[in-house]
Image (tube, rainbow, N blue to C red; front, side):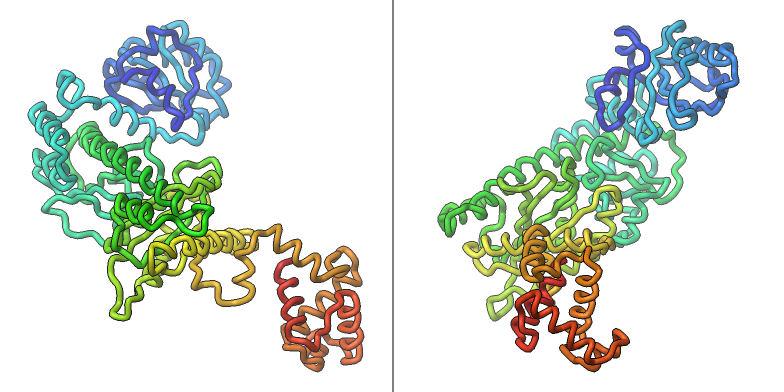
Amino acid sequence: MHVEDLLRLESLGLTLLWGDRPQLTREITGVTATDLEDPGRFLQRGELVLSGLVWWAPADDEAKAERFVAALEEAGAVALLAGEETHGGVPEVLVEACRRHGIAILSVPVHTSFRAVTDTVYLRQWGDLSRRPAAPYALPENVRAELSRLLADGTDPDTLLTRAVAHLGTPPAYVLSATGRTIARTPTAPPLPVRRAAEAVTATTTLSVDPDASAYAQWHLHLPEPVETPPRMLHEIAEVLAQHRRASLRRERTARGRATDLLALIDTPSSAAAPAALGKALEACGLADQDPYTVITVKGQADDDGTSDALTEALRHLTDCGVAVGRLPTAEPGEATAVIGTRTRTAAGTDGGGGAIATTLKNLWPTLQSRNAKVPLHGGISTPATTPQSLKGALTQARYALTAARSRRASGTEAPASNLTAIEDLTTLGALLTGIPADVRTAFGIHALGPLADDTNPSHRMLLETLDVFLTHNGSWARTAEALHLHVNTVHYRIQRVEMLTGRDLARLDHKLDLKAALLCR
């Protein structure tokens, strides 16, 4: 891996402060993080130096920066990556010192951790396991050759992990997904419950396998017990797993293409997709004869392309279901949809697992959300579709439930579990209305309430409050008066004013429901 390769990685966000072609094409053999004033004796030739610049202060003279950079040059360092967090930027005197000594200098933004840089270097430099000379590597040559053959043969992750750590005495080791699924484990590693595995993902003994993957698609190498081995060796083992992961991601992209074709058929503007075409599309996705089907639609950040990864990872916890994750042709940016085949049916011919799917996903949602807390994930789940032909209706339900989930966020409900809404959850008038687009709800409220919709008028605010309390107390004059600390005659007067301004008769149940819905839509 060369210095210039780091600049191409948008995930790191590095900025080149100085460096010509000869400096940027130098080969990186390792990484050392230091904040010593003179780190030379701890460096090896070809290493990248990470520094938070704690050793430097604005009051220091140029000589201090000069000594630091001179030590890097003498040790044979290929580049300096300077953190911006300590001083809000990289001092110009340090940039000038690097220019004089021919050391490329890159700035590391506050949002990029040094660990991310270290992981990236060690994972990317591995490259082809068998083609490069053994000198830069910590793994024995025979181990690298064996792992290369296993990768070429498409071996399973359990075997790959076991062989990768065999020369260490086969310690307990796991490959875990972002939400705690066990992808692989060595024979010495006992089964790990999902909850404990999800906690292990963030442990200090856990190493990210592919830092360039999204937060939801990430794999993690976890060794629960201390291992007497160089950190670089673990990074190289992680890179072996990363190559296996990239191969699986290529297969996932192919599968998502087939799923997108299926969703396009389901969402066809005509009354129903041709049964034969729909059947072939389901078969291509591995979902033929797996009805009843459940549809789920998830929305992340508009410019975030990890939503499909998030949905795929969540659905992998449904071990008894077939899934197809793709994008609707009419989808908004950051939206993904999946069809879930439940495979089994009850004796009566109807699915008993629709509720179980929603329960499993709701329990998982806070963990999934925590993997990228800055990007809220909202989802909607349909009721089971008993036939392929009823998938269109299930898709409509899922999108309606998604709108309801996003409306709850807007109303202040922020708990991650509440960000996932199933159609079965919409059991009240208020819940049902949340699935209606906000613009439609607002328009209904304005037209149903008439002049009262203008709540900037103090008199109108008073009447709206009275109406709300009156409807909450089932039209009881006495209880409304008691709740508002008013005389009953005052309540009668105010309700008459409401009826006059809205054109509604509050003695009628349908008119009461209209105004109740209008209040909920405000």
